[in-house]
Length: 181
Image (cartoon, rainbow, N blue to C red; front, side, top):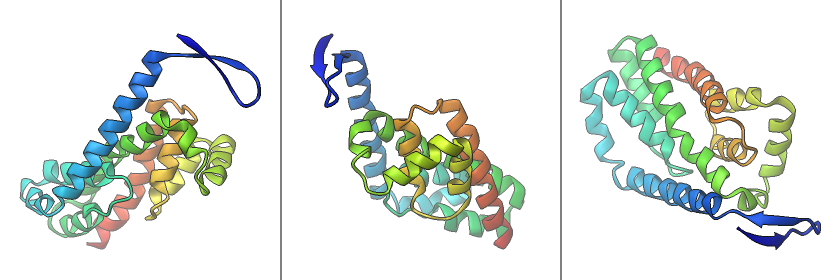
């Protein structure tokens, strides 16, 4: 470990293990996002796999950060073909796990996230309401959830808590889309 001085004058130890984890997490996020974007046309073929296909599409769609992917559309269509509750369950499970990329991006890039304009408001909401913020943003179709996941990672919300709250919110959203199909 080596020492560094923060802006507030406090001396801080540099932890190589933490730095290595952050770099690996960031590279993983970039690789998954790139793979999801490059394979976006191939995702349509997973639909024939039934519930496991819905899970995979949802996982990959939510693992891409900010890039659009067909997860919601597949849930909507699959809800008219399969049991909507099971469709929502598979889609929500995949979506919650896929959102770990945003969480890891925040965990690894804590300093970068603090400079994002919408981050300050989300950080305040996360500190005040915790998991409820994750649930609400996961339940509403919006692009802010990537930032919310990153904020949860940057604030070191326990990963199990993040997954539970994200799953609950995604389940609400996926049920609505599956039944709309």
